[in-house]
Image: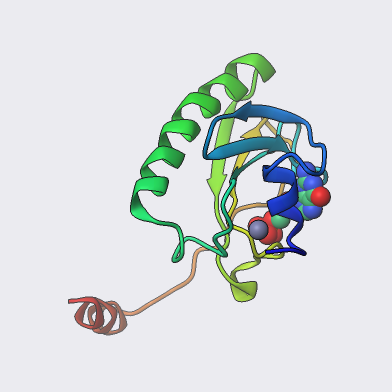
Length: 133
Ligand code: 5GP
Ligand code: ZN
C-alpha cells in the first residue's frame, strides 16, 4: 500500500509519537486528539478495516488495548475511556487503514462522542432479530 500514510507511520517510515510498539502493532498519539491522550493502535500490515483484520491479529490487538487503556487512564488521571473503531466512510472512517481509538475521558471534557438514543417498536426490533438469526 504505497500511498497509505498509516502504513508508513506503523512501519516507522514517517515518525510518530509512539506510545507502544511490538512486531505487529504500533500505538501512536492522534494528531487531532478528541481529548488528551487520544491514542490509535495500528497494525503494521495493511488492513482496510475490521472486516479485513485476521482473527489472530484481532486477538493480539485486544491484548495491546488491555495493556494500554489502563495505562492511559492511570498516567493521565482520566475519569473514563472510550474505545471506538470506525469502519467505512458511513461510519466516520477517514483513514482507510485499520485503527482502534483509545480516548481517555475527563469529567466535562466536552468531547462529543456519544449518540442520541433512537426509538424502535417491538415489531421492528423483532424484525431485526429475525434477520440476524
Ligand atoms: P477515523 O476517522 O478514520 O476513525 O480516524 C482517523 C484518525 O486519525 C483521526 O482521529 C485523525 O485525527 C487521525 N490522524 C489522521 N492523520 C494522522 C496522522 O498523520 N498522524 C496521526 N498521529 N494521526 C492522524
Ligand atoms: Zn496502510
